[in-house]
Image 1 (cartoon, rainbow, N blue to C red):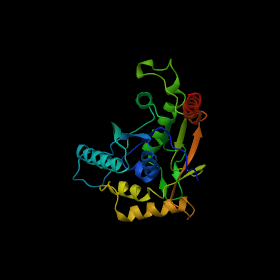
Image 2: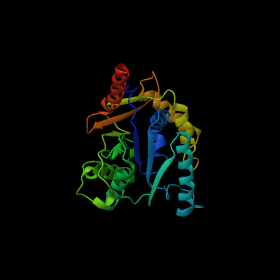
Image 3: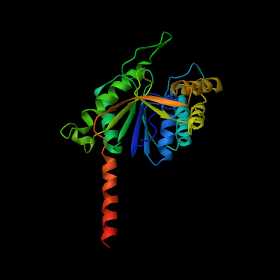
Image 4: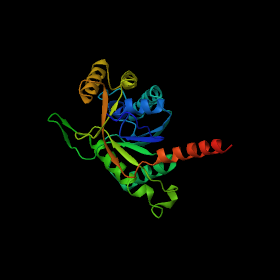
Length: 250
């Protein structure tokens, strides 16, 4: 279990409202409780994600954005960016990549939590949504190397290096976060998406959290790619050491 690490800041890039709650909301809530500044980026507002013909794309988008805001607030996340691409029509375009680069440079996250660009088939009963694949590819291309390159799109802001990418919904995780303290927060956030899920789905997600934690604790699993060495422990230790030395000299 990877219980101790808390980034100063994190950005979660998802395709649809509820992707975060199905995936990493327990980790986000835990990090937010410990002082991390977290930004949610929703590429679509889920404006075709229903079989209810009483909705229009506009009314559904408004409803799902409201649900996402409520879900984020439950987790202690107050900053959300909606890019408002059409649900079901996302491609990993240069336009989308540039939009994500701009947000990375604006918010300057230490960690980006992303979708997995690799799977088309998940198990033998599910085809991965094309928006998930497209958003995942665009996110990876925006994070590295583009966002950090000063000569690439200087009009989008000062370059920024994302230190780590945490990929959710993976079959080959290398990091597990104990979400014992935030599992019920995750479930309540998921249930905020009333247009999409009910109690039965929430119970399945609760069970999956225990499966991820091998029945010991509820957990969320990630594949973590460390692009740059963690160095902030040393940065924080230096002022403390300097203060201690000054006190000793006084």
